[in-house]
Structure formats: structure tokens, C-alpha cells
Length: 484
Image 1: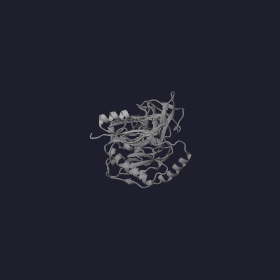
Image 2: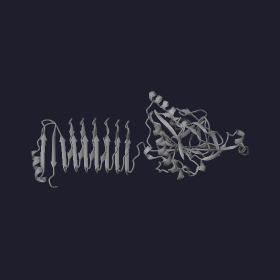
Image 3: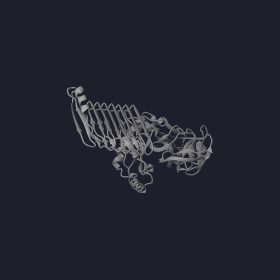
Image 4: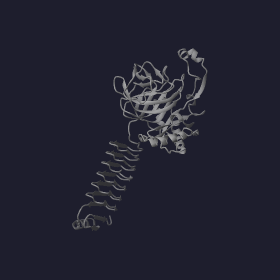
């Protein structure tokens, strides 16, 4: 099998390069004959459509259809080599899904999409300079003629439960894609992102051209607006065509629709919940009144992701809450529980590895909870009110860091059973603590002596205690155990 760039699906989207990869089978590949199909050599006339005997007289030709289509995104400076690397990554996995007959299951080819790459692309808004750079790069991308081949089979991945629209199958009727049609059958069952769309175009017509799909909001009284849309490009007729890697917002109760400048979508005038239609391109649409056809159903289906949090791998529980312009929760690996809340323009929490419990809370315009947390039973970091970060913690049973009111940082802590650091009222830092059974550091204004504490610790632990004090802001206690 091989994969190539499909120029019709390469467009600018939200300031990024959107690239469509079309995947094809070759003789000897599994179920090659399914997508090597016979179609009329020209579109049928109305008389031929009405009379099957006349239709059979039209010569037929063999046509190889893509077994899958996948979209990727890149910056304006994405290189040809980077695009080819994405081709080599995705082709074996989607072929594995094909070999396991997921193409026969509604939304099934999504099982070939590596979860590591299921990340929503950035939106740069209406940046005209960036858009010009993207358009210039697309000229070269559309002219990439090389094909990437492989004989390897990849792996399959989990799929999710959002779905919208009607199963994409061969039906007895069809409609012209030059009308905008919105399927009332099967509204969206959840809120999230539609990233995979399936459709089936009538083999007796032309291939679909300039096809767009969209999610629609029903405003009542046959008035609808688009929520989000995607440009698909050309769509091959005569078999189910699947497009993954899309990025359309969807909310529970939304509907899916399509429009194109050519082609006919498989449909049936009975058995459905009906459809809205317009004889114009209504993608996008803003509070447009549509006609309604009762009982109508057509072969357009979407599925996708219910969460905006990036994927984790090998984690028992991942909980992420993003509100008020926060960015994202990054990938978490081999952790039992990872909980992160990002609020009020916070940035993000970096990767955490091999930790039983990691809790990060970022509030009020702060920076990230910084760096890795490794091999810790419990790590808790709370950052508030314009503070910077809690730095790396390693091999500690319990670590608690509390940062308040313009303090700088709770610095590195290593090999300690219990470490508690409290920094308040414009202090500078709580320095490194090493090889201590119990280490407590408190930074306060003014001087203080610990003679009584020294005496108590000396009697109980037989320890050497060293006290360093300054007149205003620094007080440090360091203890070293003798003989266990």
C-alpha cells in the first residue's frame, strides 16, 4: 500500500497548513478488491437513472478508491521530510485497522489513528501575515508527487463514543451535493470534537468536488447556524470514504451536514428523521432558514473525542479541568492518579512520571508547575498569587510546598522522608535539604534562636545541629543523623 498528498484537501485552517493524506491499496494487499471498483465511464442521464436497463448499457471503467484519508497539520515552515515522516507513521496503523475490518464498522477506521497524535491543532485567529505564509507553503505541498510505501502492519488504538449522523452505506437514492443538506437523524450524543467523518457518494454521478462538512445548531423553526466546519476537498464515488484528523467543534444536540460543487450523496427518502436543505452553499451559515424534508436520511456520519485534555498513556486516572483561557494538561505516563486544575490564564503542567499521586493547582496568572516529579509517593504543589514555580522533587516520601505572596521558589529537595517548606511575606527561597529524616524550614522576618530546639533534638536523636541566623530574613536548620 502507499500514501500520497491529496491536493484538493490541502488548505489553510486557522493559521496552519492542513494536509490531506490519501491511502491506497495495491494488488496483494488485504481486501484490495473492495476498493478497486467499477463505475460508469460518465455520469448517467436522468433517463438512464430511471431505467436500470439503459444504465447497464453505459460502459464501465475500473477505479481505485482510497481505503482511508487522514488530515495532518503543520506550521508554515513544515518541510517535505516532516510530511513524509507523518505519512510513514500513519500508513501502517490505518492499514492494520483495515486488515481487522474496522472499515466495516461505523467509525471503525478511527482505531488506526495513533492516540499520541490526537491533539487539537492550534488556532491562530485572523493573522493575515501567517495566512499568507501558509498559502505560499501550500503551493509546494500540493505539488508533492512522491508516494510513501510500506509492507508493514502497525497497531490499533482505542476509539471514543461521540457520534453524529447516519451510517455511511450504499442506499437506493441520492441527492446532489450542490444543495446543502443537514441530517436530522442521530444528533450528537455528547460535546467535544468531531475528528472523523464518513460518507458514501453515488457511483452513477461524478466524484465529489470541493466538499465541506459542518456541525449545525438548530435554533428552531427550521433556522440553523454552523458551529464549525471542515474543507474535505475531492471525494471518490462508489465506496465509503473515511476522513480522520479533522477538528470540528460539536455540542450535544448538534447535527451534521455537507455541501459540494459536484457529486451525489447516497440517500433514502424514508426511514430517517428528516433533513434540512438549501439550494445554496450554507457552510458557513448564520441563522439561515432551511426547507425541511420529512423521513429523509443520507450517508454522512461523524465520530470524535469527548475531552479537550491531551491523551495520557499507562495512567489509571487522569482528570483535567481547563477554564478561563488556560492551555492544556500535558502527557502523563505511568502514574496512578494525576489531577490538574488550570484556571484564570494559567499555562500548563509539565510531564509527570512514575508517581503514585501528583496534584498540581495553578491559579491567578501564574507560570507552570515546573518540571518532572519522579519516584514520589505524594507530591503536592500549590502556587498562588503571582509566584513562579515549585521545582523538581525526587525520591521523597512526602513533599509539600506552599508558595504565597510574591515568594520566589521552593528549591530542590532530595532523599528526604518528610520535607515541609513554608515561605511567606517576601522571603527569597527555601534552600536544598539533603539526607534528613525530618527537615522543617520556616522563613520569617526578624531573628530567632533555636537553642531549646537544639537541646531537645540533641537528646532525642544524638544529632549534630548547626544553626545559622541572620539579622533579618534568613534562618536555616540542618540536621544529620548519626548511626540511624
